[in-house]
Length: 143
Image (cartoon, rainbow, N blue to C red):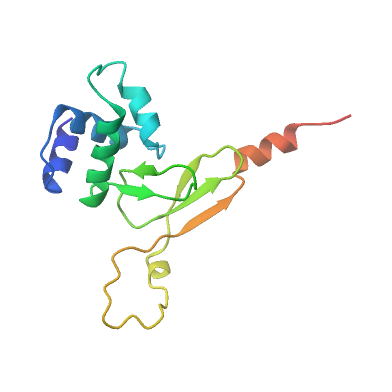
């Protein structure tokens, strides 16, 4: 909990029991969960926690730069406590989202003329089938 507490303070977020629990979940479960997944996991031990609180907390975290909000899935927003420069791959079959490390030079993409603009975010998303799903197909034999 100490790291979660420090992370909140570092991003100008006033710690509360709910905020600490959500941040702790994100920092220990590196699965890019949705708000519903976080709520479902935390609510049994926090009966006063509401879905609205989880959604509002995640929105605050994203606005303050404490987490990344991923919109790689058209139906859900997912959240990532790893705010370092990296990309994501989403399996279109199982839905799992993987982190992909990218070389620093990949972030130096030639941009169109943006004079007068300040770029704050660049998103690299990849979609396809993960090796686990492909492996399941290769292990299935039809006689």
